[in-house]
Length: 307
Image (cartoon, rainbow, N blue to C red; front, side, top):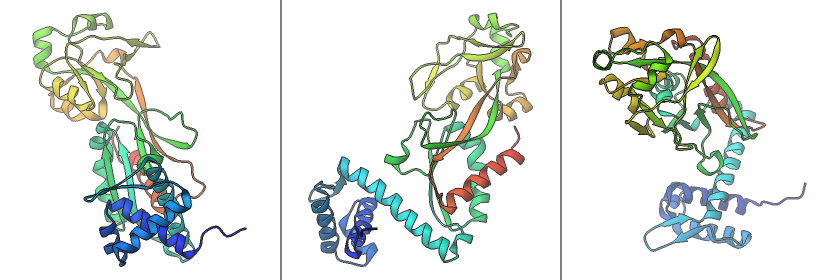
């Protein structure tokens, strides 16, 4: 195989990634134990080789160009794979280490994932975790995430999807609301109730509520004058305070149902669910820390977390 990268070029790539991560030539120089001029020369060397400007420089700061951002993400992944290869051949693979970036939607973060991460860190203290709690879809390549949890399987064939669970849905309301507005006895009754709405971040649309009727799955379009976006837990908080009906995941309201804060409605039409998937890029060799986390979290969710 023809040699394409010499030691100087590989060193330049490492310094470029440091500068991109720290948004500063000076900070990168301090971290690497070299001078800021050496970092600047390394970046200039890469820009000349690529024929692309990697940074926009001002007197106060630097920021990646669009081309620089693409190059940085690819280089960061390549350097990470090189480090993982060294750990495997030197026997360090027995001890997962390094950073993990995870994106997860709000309800799954608070009621499923976050309660398990303390145990993971105690078991694998050399793995650090950066958690992005949001319902916004992320881009693995552009944003540097290792894993994501989402409520649907991806269309992207470059991603692997492992189902974590089918999360049961339940229709609930507070006793104060039911005392004021009455209790629905059938699906048709929902049309006369305040049904709390949530706009999907990915589409801005409201999704119908699924129920079972006569053995078949039916979607019911509901109406209401209160709507939340971004944070789906907002409509659950509204329901707790008597604002209306909401269909949500049972794992979110299990405690509320147990202590009477919320009441389950139309159980004869229940039994519907939505899936949650753990997503990660399709790579021939996953890093040990990613593999370890995937195995840990799937095992805990299957055996320890109440459904």
